[in-house]
Image 1 (cartoon, rainbow, N blue to C red):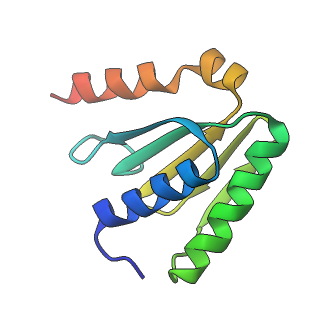
Image 2 (cartoon, rainbow, N blue to C red):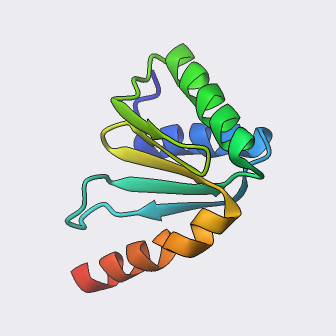
Amino acid sequence: MIENIDDRVKFITELLDDKKAIDIEVFDLDGVDYIAQKVILSTSISGRHTDALLTHLKVALKTQNEEVLASDETDDWSVADLGDVLIHIMTPEYRELYSLETFLEELKTKSN
């Protein structure tokens, strides 16, 4: 198990990058009133790619004794909850439509 949260985030982002996820962003929300300390956003190429990325992520995390506490999966948007880290994998259309980057940035600004 990777104990350090920054090392865990690095492991996850490298894994997503290796499997061709694009526009990977990490939001540090430590100290912000939010359900996770870190949020990872990534874009898939298609709905099938979204599913494949999440499946690969779950398998790779299991090899590190990392438990996905919950996940919600659709072809366009999947979320994996690791407790202190949330991972979003979205198609380009959904990423643009929901603009989580804007929400997370505003959340950080309001807490400062």
